[in-house]
Amino acid sequence: RPRLRSERRSESLSLTASALARSDPAVKQILLQLDQEERPSQRFLIADLDETHVLIAPDAVDRVREVRPRSLSLFLEQD
Image 1: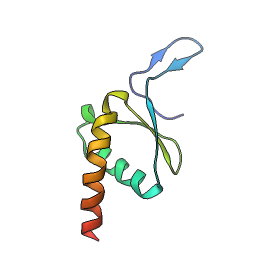
Image 2: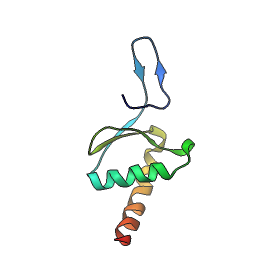
Image 3: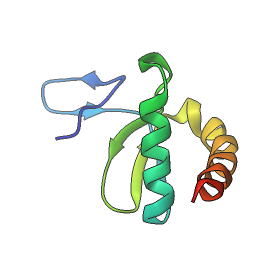
């Protein structure tokens, strides 16, 4: 099971607030890289679900929306 931050535990249920993000695999890889470059307290990815989906901390959704286009253009300029 993926490691979740801000987990609330009970004996039979574990819940975490998050936002589901869907993107193409290339953008998802950029998001994974950006998350790893953050300080541990600033990381925004809660779980990597599959090729095109990740769970993002709800308080980081706007930050991810702002960072992604800039990072994508920088990434494309490097190629």
